[in-house]
Image 1 (tube, rainbow, N blue to C red):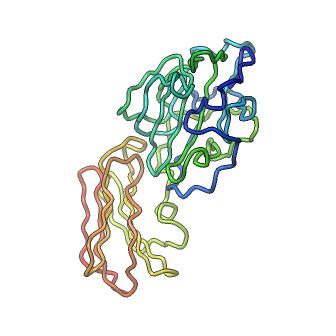
Image 2 (cartoon, rainbow, N blue to C red):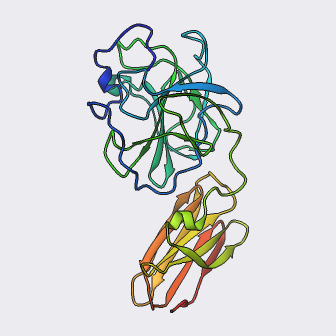
Image 3 (cartoon, helix red, strand yellow):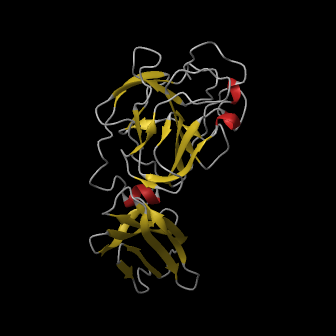
Amino acid sequence: MRLKSLVTAGLAVVLGLAVGAATAPAASAAGARPDFQMPFPCGQVWTGNSSASSAHQSYEIDFNRGSTADADYGDTVVAAAAGTVVISAHQGSTNGFGNLIKIDHGGGWFTYYAHLSVRSVSAGANVNQGQKIGEVGNTSKPGNNIAPHLHYEVRTSDTSYPANIQKAVFNGVTFGYPAQTVTSHNCGGTSANPYTPQEVCGSGYSVIDSAALGTAGTVYLLYNSGNGYNCVVTMKKTSLGTATATTAYLEVQGKSRVTDSGSYGYYAGPVRASAAGTCVKWGGKAGSSTYDSAFEHCG
């Protein structure tokens, strides 16, 4: 948090959810990391700093690009990845975030955009990667005299604050902590699904079958010979980054079916079950297309 004047009292709680010394986050057990891009329009160059504020816990970043204190006020902020807005509110008196946008990207991944002068999306809205969500500002807790900047965080849901704060990755490259100047490649998202079935299911899984779901996606059956588990995942091909109805299921003969069904940007699943030497039924849905197998792959 870049300050106009030295205001340190109370800043240790500007993130609101915990107070304490900075700690490195534990390794995340969340799902596959989304293809995050810079939270600014394509081609813009911004400098981020994680160590200039007494309020920072670990891997948060404050972004500026102007040469004067107020130069960045009103600059456009965009979604780092597609997702659903879960918070769009002024939280200054609560935790010092001021105008905050929080986006759920699925798989236990979230991004935070704080101190905005304007919030351009409402809670519940689905946003695309690169879509405008607000403008850089200096809203905060009463008495916190801060210069305009964007406070950006990536968090996961698999552990508690502040250990759930993750290192920021932009365009596949980890941010160069504590400070780096970065060019935005947030140019409207990608035309292909950035994930693979193997990445979603995890280490040791190989594809053993698949079925097309029209043009909307493909459902995959994978197997891990090391532990005898099958895995099913439905990978989208269209409406990438936009939450649409997607389903994956796996049924081991003699046991109850396990299903993952919801509105997802890139895939449904992974659905895993122990099935060594046992027949399985598997399938999924994307768009208007559905696939349901018979009991098969019994080896």
